[in-house]
Image (cartoon, rainbow, N blue to C red; front, side):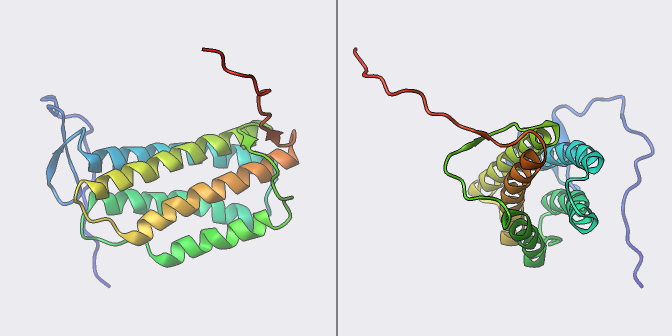
Length: 196
């Protein structure tokens, strides 16, 4: 078995300041406004949102134990996503990771009635946290696409995983709302004639 090498943070600060730069996993120093750093930071933010959502979800009992374990595993996979973004050339996320999300999406979506209108973020405390995580997942996807658009290579499986995660969070939000206060459906404003 090979020994895994890594860095252990023994001191968090340097006393010299970072001058707006940070190092990624391969030692390369990048500006903190680099698309790669934006993507890494947004995935980290998403993982924090997932932590809050998972905590509230665990208190609710809205999922089976198997479903809840699958949702908890997402935090570990997001750490892999961030790790892969921080180490260009390394692949940690595979197509199988997205397949796991798709299976959970199908399982949670099957009992839900078809939508006849848009849903609003709401329907209870847990559903609100789920929708917050969903919107950050969508933003994470956009930052990863921006990284790719800047000429950097991005693992297609990683992009699929983050996209599928936002789909799962949408379905999970619906599921949780129906277990709590009910889904909040968008009501269109009455149509009025525009008089310039």
